[in-house]
Length: 223
Image (cartoon, rainbow, N blue to C red):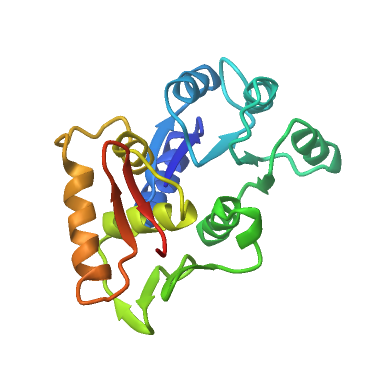
């Protein structure tokens, strides 16, 4: 999953970015509102962590602009202000959630996990496709009750496909959601990771879950 982090405090930006990457998120980080808008124009994100008090353009202005253009990417606002009026202003601007500084990184990660769940998954932290289970809170993956160990990128790819189960995802879309602008890998990287996942998820199974749609991409589904 790909996240945009816009926070002008460099130390805090680095701390949050490091924690997100440790949780296998792909992260693009920036330090002002104008830069945040540039990133949002250039890529699709699964969530945005947006500080309110930033130079050049504040977070509320950024939020209002993207919502005005119909962009409904989940947004978590960060702020040092804790008055009711400030919270209402952020939510009225279109924020999905609001976190007051200082905060524990564990709480930030938990709130991001909630933002990334689809409405039908909101009461359940487990994604299921057939007998495949992906526990998004613990990163545990099981098939038929048997635990499967995945690398960070394998898990991120499988989780994204499970969140879009039944939808054909192009290689470009998968790559865009799993790597940030700093990535400079090979053009067949998605094919390589799909091959890894098939060995771990489908090999030896009568019911295959990962399917290739020729000329279009890949889909995770029961036949």
